[in-house]
Length: 137
Image (tube, rainbow, N blue to C red; front, side, top):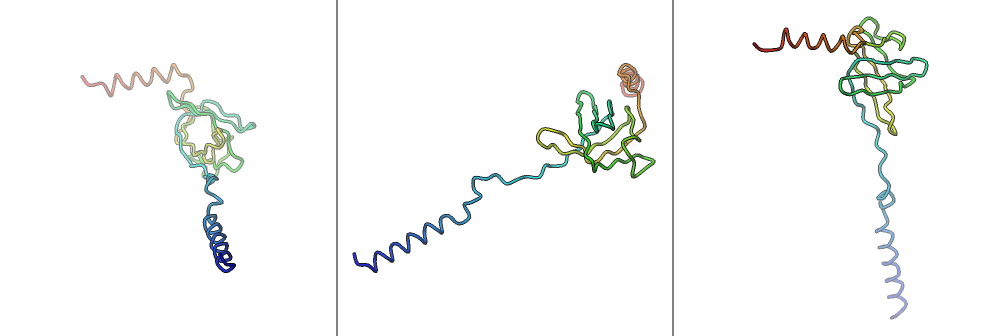
């Protein structure tokens, strides 16, 4: 083999090696996905404004949320409310993201006034509504 053929083979080999490596730097790295915003509706069971933690229940589910520092809180009376305006028993829609296994609320909308927080009273009211209005004769 003469020198010209060796240099040509070497140049082609280097070019192919470089071309094969282009765009492969991110193949094994997962793309960072932004957490999806989800919603949950229910009744506030516990609310600690100082610790910024809230538990919302929609029987049979209950979820505990950390409340973000930039969380938007809205009530029927105030479009820009605070956590102090919410009370246990209030019906709310919570928009949240799950980050590292922690549910973080970014928006809380009060949908209705506080309801009974006593489960027995709520169950009796539910059963009466079923018996009186929904049950077919």
